[in-house]
Length: 134
Length: 368
Figure (spheres, each protein chain N blue to C red):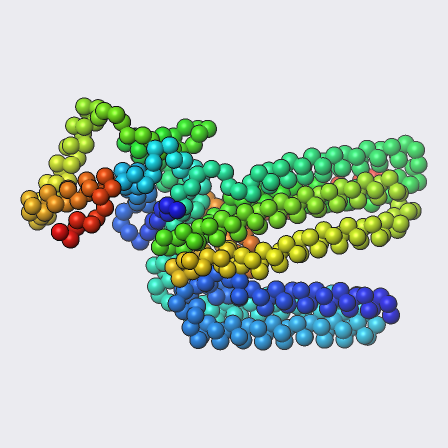
């Protein structure tokens, strides 16, 4: 049973916490394409947050291609695109470059960065965090 | 003498039933909750909490004995009905005062860490319609149809009577319309409660939450189905009774006595049996079956002491839930911070008063 958790004490806004968790679950394959997610109303009720907060998280993930939102069918997990679109690829690479630059500026070495990227990619592909201690 | 015996018997049964439920409540409450306050799962097992529970049992027994003594005493003085009512009043008001006192004691045990826990929420990633909602929707449709039909039949019958037997009609409008009015207000309301319960907030535990989710879902589904069946049975009973009373006529109403009693007893036994069965099998909110994850801390609004008034009334304007799990007691309660919940309660009260007003005004006009 997959559970979503939020912590209002964190600095991260709730919609981002929801979006981040769902993004990770989809990328790691724990949420497979076609899986029906709770409706905005149902998830907002269970978490005790405003409807707009969940709606915002869902809309964000829909714009990123993680979810499909249809009125009658509800919210389902989207299948990954077969081929990445050029403009989308460029935008995402820019974001990755910016994040890596910030990590570098925060004091991480090139080797550390390479290791982290490798670990994260393996985690997404189902390799898990077992290589973290290597 | 016979009346006094029967009345005292009713009082005794009522005291034992209500008192028994009060005594049982702490044992079916979700771990971490103590008399309407969230004190955390670790503290709930410690001596202070145990002592509070033990003293609660003693308090309940004293209250039950007091209620019976007062009731019997007044009954023996020649006023059995007054004794019954006073004894019941002592039981209910005493129970409330007892609870509020124990709630304030439990609040003193709340650790600072509980405030942090209250900020956490967990929800299952499960789509689809809630279980129990199907029966609730059917019950709502059936109750609305049946109660409106019965009400229309009552009004139509009164019109016929006006045309044929004026003397009869002047004295019987209130009697004809009363039960259909109660039915129209009550049974759709219960069906609506069933639907709201089927969609109530699920208060999970932190951590993996797996066992907690299944327990919550099973409890919610079962309670929603019970309330749905309650609505159907009450509607069927009152509709049947309404039509029978109209057709029998006021002079022969007494012949219905045994029929009414038997049906009422069956409905009460059905509801009571299932209520106790659910309490024993599931506990409140699935407390007795969430064995796998009972040590993990509660999350969502149920762990937030600031959202509960007296541990009984939940108020959270941000929370879109209409029904939430009760902290102390059984079943679910309304979120009084939600305008929809307030609207439902106010609508029910207004509708009930309006129907009573129609019955009273109709009686006066008929007699005029």
